[in-house]
Length: 221
Image (cartoon, rainbow, N blue to C red; front, side):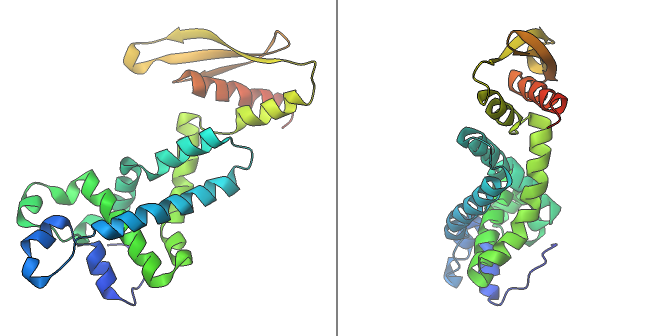
């Protein structure tokens, strides 16, 4: 496993890597599963991610921040990180879970990631926990914004328009095409009934963000 951290208390690392199936099969050894650490890791992850997004996007509204955080801390995202560091090679599984492909199961790897984060937090403190997970969160947030249109372009443009009370900002669906599973949208951005920009995207939201980005560029922002 690729882990740039050395545990002072190696029992914490073992506990983080102990799946419930392994603990159940080895009750005589009194090993506990990583479920309690997973609980703590979820809270630590939420705080680290929330603080990062709060500071990185000062103009992003609460709803936007929540959606972006949800995308970063979901099972799919944590599974991706676990694969990057080869976390699966360290997890202790029961025989049945091992035979059933548990070492590659997204839920198992995501839960172990949270448990490992908690173990690092308990062993080395918050800064070490940030060093472990924050670089990944930063990379993924940039990718998410680019692919899903989650950004503060609309908010930034709205703040500019609000300074001029005589101006109104409107988004209007211009075109919708493609099958239901792969639709494309085009949106017009109007200021005072004048079309300023056309945005495109795989969702109305993404198209609106694209249009707002273009409008900001025209304004030299």
